[in-house]
Length: 321
Image (cartoon, rainbow, N blue to C red; front, top):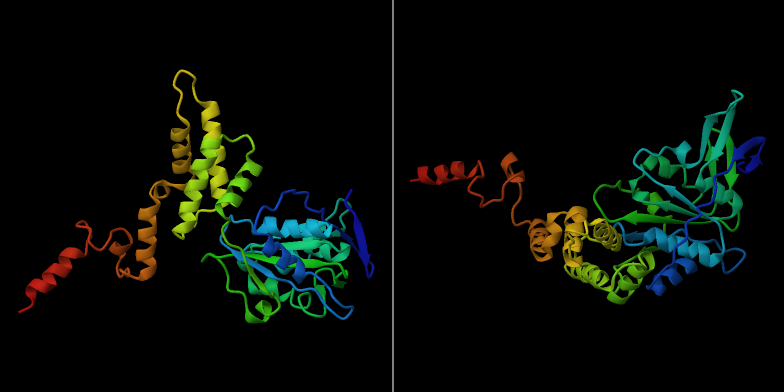
C-alpha cells in the first residue's frame, strides 16, 4: 500500500524511493563537491541545486545516488523526457476504482515531502514549460504549485536536488532563468585506468582478467582520442563477450579475444573496431573540412568517384575559357 500525505485537504499518494545500490569508485573530489553543494552552514542558508554535466554512460546518476547514500537520505529519481508535462513532474491525477480522482505525487514531489534527495535525470531533455513549473522550487521560495491538484507544496528542509545533463545534441536548451538556479556546474570526466578497471571488476566480478584488460585498453584509448565510448559501453561489451563464451558450442569453441571482438562489433558497431580512423573522421567533421551542400554529400565523401556532383563540377571547369 502506497504511503499518503495530505495537503489542504488533498490526499497525495507518494512514490516509492529508488532501491538502487551502487558504489561510487574513484573521482572522490567531485563527490565532495556535490556534498558541499547540499550543505547548509547557517539557519539562513539554503542548499544549492547543482547540475552534473558529462557524456552519457559516464556515471552521473551513480554519483548522485552516492551523494544521497552519503547523507543517509532516501533517493528518488525522475527520468526527464522531451514530452514531460508539468503534471508528470509534480502531481498526476488518476481515476481510482471508486470513480474518484486520486492524486499521485511524482518522485520529485515525494522527495520534497519526505525530505529525500531527488535526481532529475537528463534534465536537458525536458521542455521549458516543465522547467518553468520548478522555478519557485529552485530559488529561496522552495515550493511548487500543482495546478491539477490546486495546492502549493513546500519542500522539507532536508530536501535536496541535483540535475544530470548529457553533452549531446538531442537535447533542449534550458532557459537562462532556470540555469541561473542550477548552480554550480560539476563536470564529470572519464575515469583513470585504475578506476575504470575497478568499476568493471565491481560490476562484473566474474570477468576474466584477460577480457577485463582488453576492455580497459579499448576504453582508455577511446578516452585519449576524445571519442564518445563510455564505461557503460565497456560493461555491455564485456558482459556480452562473457555470455558468448558461455554459450559457445564445445565442439566449436571461440577464443576470448574473438568473443570480445565480436561483442565489440555487435554492441558498438564497426567504427569501434578502428578507433584511430574514427577519431580522424570525427576531427574532419568537427574541423569543417567538407561542408555538405547537396543531397549527395550526405552519402558520399567529397573525393568519392561515385559522388553524383563530381562530374557536374568537372564540366564547369572544362567550359571555362
